[in-house]
Length: 116
Length: 116
Image (cartoon, rainbow over all chains, first blue to last red; front, side):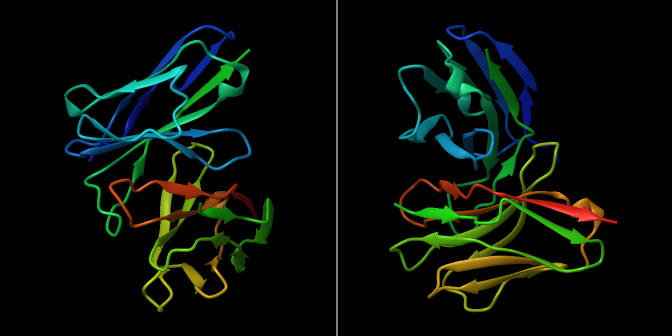
């Protein structure tokens, strides 16, 4: 099966500019996640969708970050305006269902953002 | 709140030898899940092994095995017969079974180098 697709792979912007990342999960996966991985740290969950509804966005900086998952398939993560500390890799993952016991996440290759 | 600690920023091993990566965690829950993920330079996180806390038997996947010490809150990964392709960042992660969210809490990672 095709994996989780993300684009762009790399993006360089100046602070206060905006950027958007796109994710296409594995076909049929109901749950989609966006993680932020800052250099030298482990990934941190920003937002989790179940179909097109938000399950957890407690760690999403809502003053500048937004995410949507239209029609329960593709998702877009937007940052506006970007800050220097937003430089990170943004990882998208998907899974078949929300079942903590059996749930296995499949990750994409990530989008690396550099904010100058 | 749960935390995951990986105290070894870097480890190295000779090809065909065995190496152990350490992970400790802090939680007040009695039931949970623990994971080891591998992140090669391609950035895609790959699940290596999973352990359910209610299972006393240590999980094993081919050359990868864990030493799960629930009382000590320790979850180490042993890689036997190391191969050059094992070189990567390794992340330990915790997941609570509660609620709808299946958020993974990651440690800061251990970079594993494999020498021929």
